[in-house]
Amino acid sequence: MRWVAPPDDLRPWTDGGVVVQAPATLAASHFPALVGSMLVLRLAGAVHRAGVGPLPAAALIGPSTRPSQYLHRGAVHAVGLLIRPEALPVLLGAPGGRLVNAQVALADVAGPGWADVPAQVQAAPDDEARLGLLFNTLRAAVAGPEADPHRALLQRLAQALQGPLDQACRDLATSRRQLERLCRAHFGMAPKQFQTIARLQQALHGAAHTGGADLALQAGYYDQSHLARDLRRLAGEPLGRLVQHARQGSGTAHWPLAVGWQLKA
Image 1 (cartoon, rainbow, N blue to C red):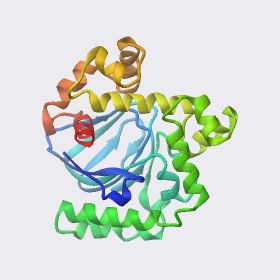
Image 2: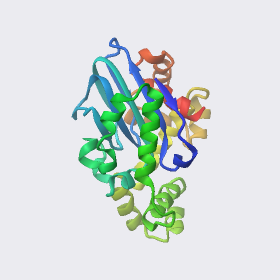
Image 3: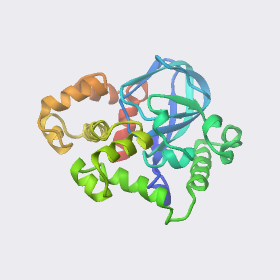
Image 4: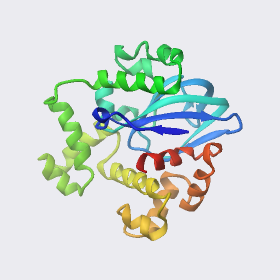
């Protein structure tokens, strides 16, 4: 499992690419709740998302408010992009909230520029070429005037949610009620829920080198018990067990956590 940094011009839209090569002995993958989305093209194997259904070979996986388990059949080979929250509505050409806790075939939601991408990915000579193709297609999909007010709003909204909600309202010159509507429409969750999941992601990304109370404080938690509560609810397991599994390498169902460590290294 490998993370690939995005080109500089795409950093506002994607956190990078991922290459997944899971052996047939790996029965499942476990993901925590996520504020971002994933664009995935599978070249081998079959995947079934527990409680949702089979994952299409070319899929867009929306934000999630709970842990997800993906069951494998056979060795799985896939490439994909980590889509930032503010990029999903641009990619869809519509508010992204309808995709929360959902997965859809890429052909059902993406524009015409993506129609030939699955076949091109299959025909590409290697994973580097496949990710290059995905980055280039994303670049074309998000191309638009820098002064586009809709895109500017999405980026300002995501930025504002990194701070206190009262400050976010002031930064956006809006009310709490309107902030709630905007966040639910575009990101699929309430502002507070978005912040909670984003904070947990920050904590998980730092868990490779920091633990316990220090990790909780660095991620913005009041104390370690609050972090532990969110881990059980949004990641499904205690921190120590998650880290132990993730350090086992490609043979662990918690490889997404190890990829997150690469992202923040």
